[in-house]
Length: 301
Image (tube, rainbow, N blue to C red; front, side, top):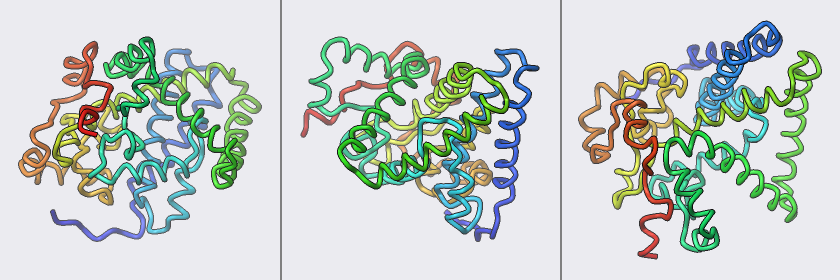
């Protein structure tokens, strides 16, 4: 797989950052002139789009300076997720030999046996529902955000000074976001929390829903969603996920051409874990679990 030299500045990504942050400022400032359903749809799109942009910045885009890249990705439009923690956990996720392992992969949605045993009947039912697409889009954001905040609270209350420092800096960013949306623009907090934060999280859960599935061979645990369409733009071509894991430093706008050139090898590598598009994912898993919530390899531990 050949790779081109990286430019000093990747201008498509730099321009995209201006579109996202400029669009967010304009949308929030003129929110009263926009019908509520349109406002929520656009707000969710921009928050999810920023999450995709953050994914780019933590992989070394759009400049060669980590400080500049982190500054681009840092603004907490989603409110709940500090960028430094997202960066730390996501880079851990790229240890492909541990993909889907609930003890080693921070982005795994599977449960290890001890945690599964503590859930009880209701908890197991909710976890199984969360393995369907409708569950991931409705219950998923609540479980993701709630579970993350609870875990972080335990670390902070346990005296983790690094985490406390991160959250204090994050609180400043959240205050700036809410100060702008509520204090300057007069947007109701509940509108931002639902239309931008919750629905934006739901859009990101659609992307991650079918990205990984347990298999014996680690290289067969990462999927491809072809024909991403408009959602491919929202996810910055991260739907071609097996390619991203193999070449995480390739910028988003070069992935489609590289995928077309290497498609046969990539499909052979991941064992044919390919979906025609997100409509295909919905057709298969809207009401049917994508996999068991208890990690399939748990019986071998």
